[in-house]
Structure formats: structure tokens, C-alpha cells
Length: 313
Image 1 (cartoon, helix red, strand yellow):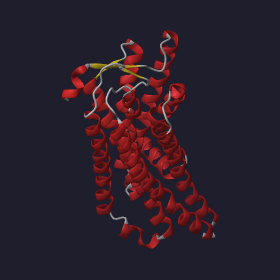
Image 2 (cartoon, helix red, strand yellow):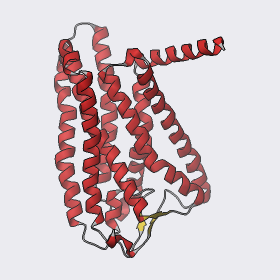
Image 3 (cartoon, one colour):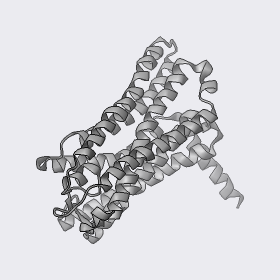
Image 4 (cartoon, helix red, strand yellow):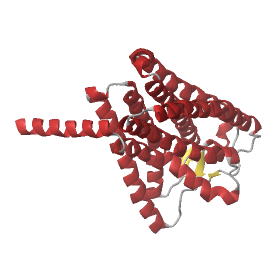
């Protein structure tokens, strides 16, 4: 931390500096954040309490819901606070902590989406061996590995960040601390940091991308062989929900981390950052819940049970 004491804080250039617009944005993003917490907590609660959802697919979906709540909570409360107070200052330790936790949750979700693709591959292509291959021991170990890998990859980038010094321009052109924007304001040479981001993107990112999409080559080939229209429709439904989440997630990350953040791209970069940090965590539960019959039935059972309990008292 010795090199980081040359200045004490950064200025976050928020989404707007126009008071009426800030008030509208505060109400809008507060509603989005509350809906994100409610919908993801609901999925997490249903998977935890409903015995019919105690299978690997919904176990990983509960992990996805927890991740969405987590990385949305890294950015949204701070942004809402800044919209109300208009202080827009963040200390360097808080900025580094924000970078670490945001990257941890995003990287973990990257690995989790690959795991969910593999789960769908086993369920559709090898249904007779599904329970044997995707046992609870395998699922819990895989989930632990996903979380550990996300934290480890984020820790590497955070340690590289500590070698930089900041001494002049301290305005971050976004509403939270993210690696590409922090690199822009350093007075050190961020070449090694950029190399680390590129290597991680080329190896881990590309590897996760291939592990996510390659199973669907075999999945769709197997689905097309299913004679029953009902079975084919159900298989397509679970796959398209997952693929929709994957496309939105990867699309926003590619633009944020791989497209150069030049001055004329600041506004567009902010838009994709908002999609990644705030909109995605809300879309994921909506995409899965609205297209998933099992989740809706579990919700109806929970509501019915609560009504019975209330009637008893």
C-alpha cells in the first residue's frame, strides 16, 4: 500500500451530474436493485426449501442467484449513495476492495455458467448416468472450486493493482471502480497489468467460453433426435434460458474489458457496465423463473403453505 498513499481518494464520475436526472436515476436503480434482491432471494429460498428442486440443475441455479445478489451489491449501494449525496469520492482501500469483490463474483459466475452447461449436457445426452455423474458430492465440490477459482483470479489482478501508484488525474469515468478505468488514471506503467488482463481473458475467458458453448453442439444434436414434441420442447426451454443468460453476460463483459476505453467511448462503456453490474443480475432470475415450470410450481406450493400456516393462527 506504500505507493498508493500519494493520494487518498478517487473521484467517481457518475452517470449524470444533472440533479433532476440524478433523482430519476436514483429511483430507477433503487427499484432495479430491490427487484434484484427480491427475485434472487426468492429463487435461493425456493431451491433451499422445496424438496422437488433438490437436484444439480437448481443447486447451480441457487449459486447463480447468490452470485447475482453479491456482485450487484458490490456496486449498487455505493452508486445509490453517490446519487443522493453527490459526493462521488471513494477512498483507495475501498476502491481496491470493490475491484476485488466485483472481479471475484464476476469470475465465479463465468465458471459457474460453464458448469451449468456441463450439467445440461449430462442431463440431456447421458440421462441414465446423470445421478451417478452429477452426485451431490460432485456438485458441492464443483461449486466450491468455482468460488475458489473466482477469488484466486481476482486476487491476482488485485495484487497487480497494488504495484501501481496514483498521483495526478484521480477521476474514474464510471460509477464504481473497475480495472480498465483504474488503469487509465495511474501515473505508473500499467503494461504488466494489461498483460495480466489479456492473458486471463485469452486463457480463462476463452476456456470458459468454449466449455460453455461446446456442450451445446452435442446437446442440440441430441435434442433433434428426441421424437416426443413435449420432451423436445422441455429440453429446448431449459437450454435457451441458460444460453440467453450466457449471451448477455459475455456480451457485456467483452465490451467492458476488451474494447478500448477511449474518451469517445466513455458513455457507451458506462451503458454496458450498467447492463453487466445492475441489469444482468435482475434479468437472470426473470429469464429462469418465467420460463421454468418447476420454479413456478414451487412458488405456488410455498404461497399455499404460507396461507395454510396463516389460517392456523
